[in-house]
Length: 119
Image 1 (cartoon, rainbow, N blue to C red):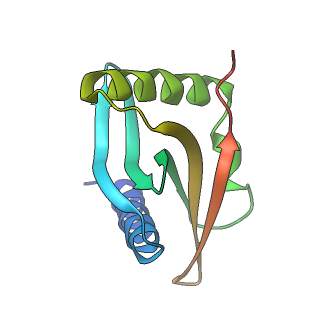
Image 2: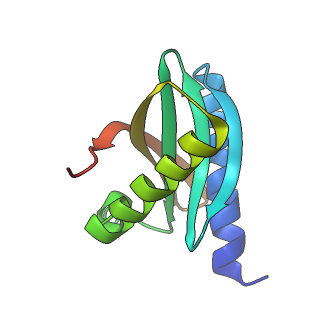
């Protein structure tokens, strides 16, 4: 596995641990719909939370900037597919968890309601 894939997997695992510690119930990880993937699907109270994880080796560029409009559309479509396939009636929220490495240490940030579906 390529080093960047290892780092991405490490970032996703750290994000999972972070969300679990915050009381989130993890429903799915790496859920696929067509060409889209949702990194983490969780429940937090009355919300179905669609989580995009972005891991970076530095903070030169903010990781959340990689969740552009195209990525947002793909996540919204995948979330719609998930809700329909599982017959879920919870309100959907889109979050981003960023994992940035600083000299071997990790800084995790959670952006709730990072974006809203475009109508």
